[in-house]
Image (cartoon, rainbow, N blue to C red; front, top):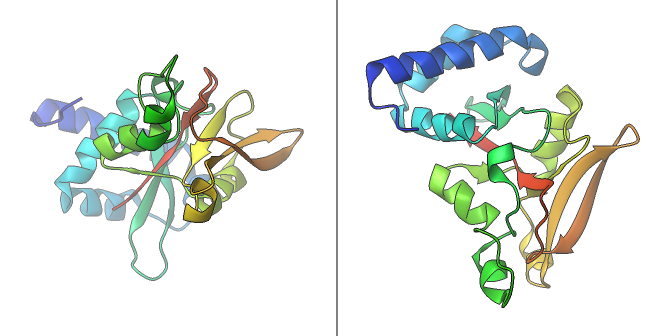
Length: 184
């Protein structure tokens, strides 16, 4: 969803503000005016947030970096974003599949949105703010040593706990997507 037009930009900002105000527990101590000022200074961020929204991510502010002051937006949809499922982990995993290739990869889709996959720490931070991925799972940014051995990480919440697992990076499932984080 390109937001070049002022009406689309206003609609996206109104959606983000409404979500921000509906979930103050996700960003204690942050004011919408500060977030809006950061977004005004970073027009590309609105394009990324529009892509996150259009694919079902329901982005919201989930914190602030202490060292830089940047605001963190994360996908806060209850389940892994519906428009980002059935993808393997990255391009190498996609090309390694000789049969039944998925439509693409989580890393390529995140890159296209100019966002990053959540790290394990960011995913745990999100899970501390609510209960997410009760029926789905989400690919996570994977350390090079794990990826170098053919694996990739994903997380979910089951039995009242957050779990981080591994799977072959070439695998894909209808209930596994990915969550993004954007620093503004």
